[in-house]
Length: 95
Image (cartoon, rainbow, N blue to C red; front, top):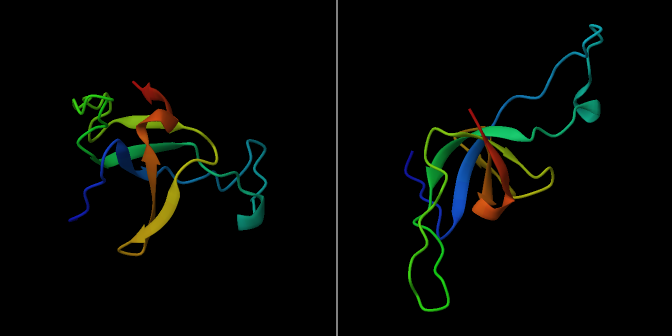
């Protein structure tokens, strides 16, 4: 792909949002909730502490993560929606 986030940032491809409710009602785009789960496509090298020592990333490429609802910056890469988020916005790694 050719994109590498800087510092403690992650490039995440959000999982598609639900098209229907559990009862079968089809949702228009305006009514869909923003996805909060996605697959990590790329990771940065990690943040640095006060002394300049690199703090390793806990999240790795291929992890499925749960992140804060309104976090990150939306970017389009090859026509697909992606998010660039900070590692601190990750709430959990989905097993």
